[in-house]
Structures are given as structure tokens and as C-alpha cells.
Length: 97
Image (cartoon, rainbow, N blue to C red; front, side):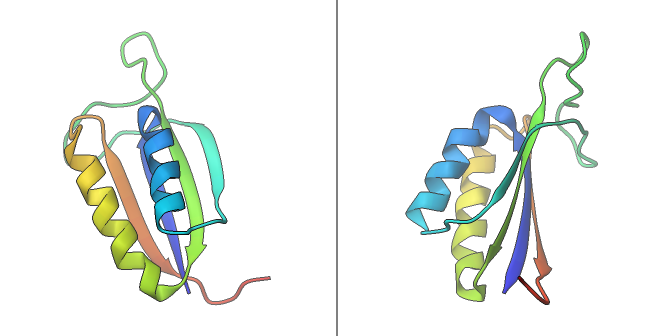
């Protein structure tokens, strides 16, 4: 089992939901307004007058065999708007209730 944390430009919300549906990923937690700035490049997302956009975030626990298909689809989505940003982190999920 793996935990996948996704931070993305808010406009990617529907696209990520569609990916979850395509890959039969049912369970997730979603945060609507997340602020941040990537450490590579791209625009900050602070929800301010200077930087008005915001990010959103997802956390999902998935089976190991679902990780690579999800990451590949997320990489493809990220390429559609590289300045806006999409990051995903895969972590071990040691226990679940």
C-alpha cells in the first residue's frame, strides 16, 4: 500500500478526478485551497493580488500496482501546463484503519 500526495494548480481538479475514475481509485482526501511555491520553477500560488492563483491537494492510499499508472498520467497532465505546477509524492502506507 502506498500514500500518494498530490499538490496541483486548482484548474487541474477535474482532470485529477477523471484520472482517479479511469484508474479506479475511489478513496481520497481533498483540500481546496493550498498555497505554495515549487522549488524548481513556475509561478507561486499564494492567492494574493500579486500571485492570485491557488493550488489544491489530494491524498490517496492505493495499492502498489496502481502507483505507476497514476504517476504516468500525472506526468502527462503536468506537461500540459508546466508553469502552473503539479507535484506528486509517493510514500509508504504502513498501516490503515
